[in-house]
Length: 258
Image 1 (tube, rainbow, N blue to C red):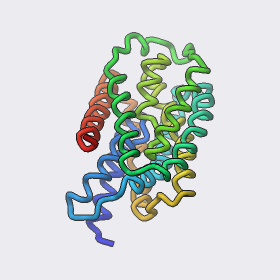
Image 2: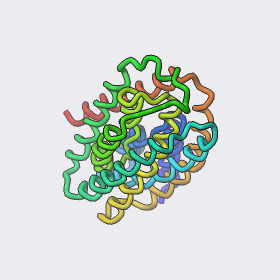
Image 3: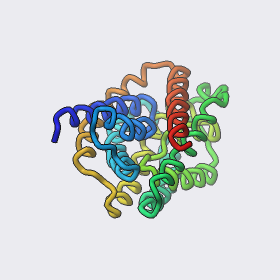
Image 4: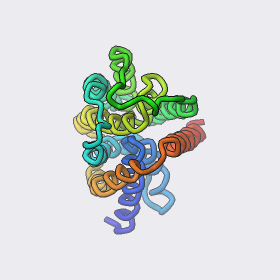
């Protein structure tokens, strides 16, 4: 195996996981297009959409562990929210991960493009006053949270993402969860989601294990570093960074699809 290939895959995993830890996303929103487009730029064979989604699913499982561990103190993890959304998204992500084997390459990229576009639009909707709510007084609609998590789980399971890039805007805009609680809790929900997606991808033979292992090593190093950095950054800045990343990725994927 070419050493430069290992370095490229490691850097993709490191950069994506650092940002994922900081913003409370699994990182697939960044790593999916990076895995699709960057290796061919350096003369390596392109991964298929099935391989990219499989690698992403396994890597997110480990990236989110580091992020949740970094956020375990401070009251940012909303256990009730994690339980309701986590249970629903686990079911949805397994259905999507298992069923994606039956989909063509273009179908997987199309689902990813739809999810990224919805997330991008939602990130630019004003979110006034949510960070003024005390963490111990946060409430949410349990049925709405569970239903949305199930839908997100199916879509994200298909593309091998854990769905946090669309969970985060849903939690901010629809459920009105404060930014730092959203970031911490979405990492925990994303971890649960990635279990379903990973099982679905592995049982249908969609995982290329060597690149996935490199990405896992990068994730375990970078994700906690990103989470610690995220605690120190202004919440408005975090929202802007996430919105920009999601929008840029959505535009790139849709240019490719069209």
